[in-house]
Image (cartoon, rainbow, N blue to C red; front, top):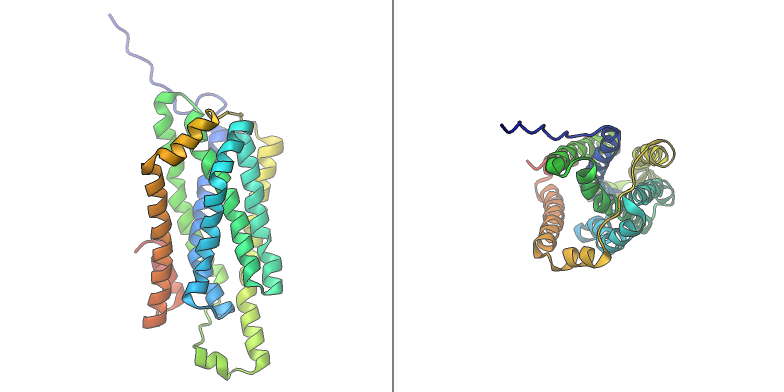
Length: 283
């Protein structure tokens, strides 16, 4: 008589805590992605930008993904998943901290640099976190672990919308005519307040990410795993048209929704809070 097989554990002994840390990464990059739509609306007010120039937020962000994806895979191959997570968190925190001097200098280009650095960190995190979640236990339960970790990504997206709505948007929305009617001092104070609204939220985000980075480096017993050879990584990224088309679809979708939100506010005068909240939540 054949005895029934014992079910494979979802989290073997000693792997639950590393999985929680990996799951936090899914939450963090979901939050960062959805804050972009909020930044577009905020920077458009703070720097009186056209829709095209405000949309450079998405361009700078996804340029970081595009340029760092393959190097991140090669780095993960050389130094393992933990090494990639450490570098990704450090870049994420550095990008968030750069928002403070960018707001002080009121330089739009520096904000774009900050977003590029932040997104470069996310390229490392996404390259490593997805396969990392699958190897933290038996192969038979890898899909379940990955689905569970990915479930926290939309929670991060919703959190990003809430943070932007509550702590970045000032609630003051002046028409171009009203801004033109202000005195030079009033206009300067208004634009400065709009640009500095991002400082505290991104400072806190940077500190949280830096705290997680320190925990992973010094305290957490996160195992090292090595990816397959570099040719297999390259072949998967370049010749798997499903992967490339999926990445292109997501990029176009997010960029299109951001431009749709901007166009909707311009032509219907819908408030920034309501417009970004609805676009960010996909409703």
